[in-house]
Image 1: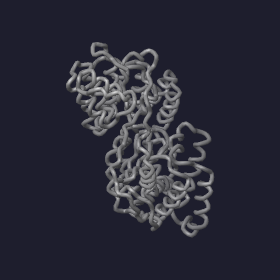
Image 2 (image 1 turned 90 degrees about the vertical axis):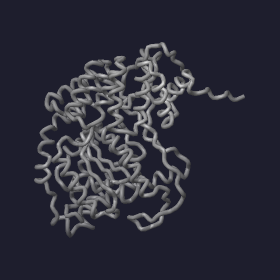
Image 3 (image 1 turned 45 degrees about the vertical axis):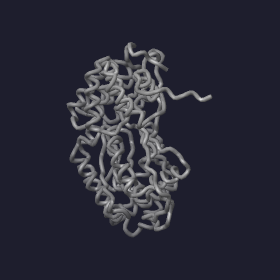
Image 4 (image 1 turned 120 degrees about the horizontal axis):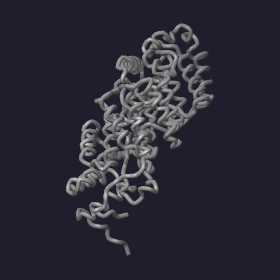
Length: 454
């Protein structure tokens, strides 16, 4: 599809699909081989080195943390999570890994690990846990995935059969109202966690559970914490399925996992189960501020559910409720900004994005959302400045190159727009956005059309 240069550059209605588009991850060529699994001590196919695990983690984890609205604004709670995580990591099979443990502002229920040891847990699950041992079970489980190299093993198998490693790409679709205008990548955060984080097998989950119990008991916490965690996840799946669906899509849950944990606490760990503490009081002390925000968190959870259903008016009402309870909550401000974008209330979206910048100036996503609101309002220069700041704060997102190109195109700066589109095409050459970038480069004389095959 071609768009004349004189045509007004605009965008189209934002939907929830706009918030899921991710950049493609390319893996370096490796030499086929085997490695000894640090947990089992057995040889296994492994085409990904430890150094590559760490590098992929370093490149990709900051984007996921930003998608989850950044690191907890409660620095004391985040320090507590990090300290507990490191006490577990010291007892693992790979203590040399550069572990980090973060709480993130997202309100859905989940925890995840990148292959190099970056581990995060959301506010949604932190507010639901009842004691420190349950948190240790959660972090220990994610440590199990890192130590057993589950992600690297899956990547190796994919590389062997030639499967492209990509992070959950979702193609955008324009609404009828804006089909005649140029397509745009929203890229408002890397919401789908994709191949580096997700889709563990049931076997992987069983092994991670067992390792988690081993690590937490070695750290002096009761294995009953893992039992309590499994019971909690089972309860949430029945009564609040919408807030836990992301976790279950990546971490298969079953009653078997609860039963296995319960059996292990009564057999393998029977002698120490009663003597080791759950540390309920300590957990409650550290999460007191978080639990004061529980009603706001629940309103955000419901609001995101309505957003997925494209019930934007209901979502807006719930986000207003959350902000009334917690007016300085970065995630609530960002959710409201996205909700306003979805309804094409561009000035209001910009206002909420600006408030989010003030509340948490070290977090990048507000600049991305604010930039898109301005781009949709034809405020191209201002949008470009937002995208520049976002890229400086959080480099490595190909979406930003495309968006900068769109803004520069609107400013009639074809030379620099072409440079940004060329950068984008190096990272992603499929889909509507790549076609738009390629067409512009051909129209402007920077790229020759491919010769037609006979």
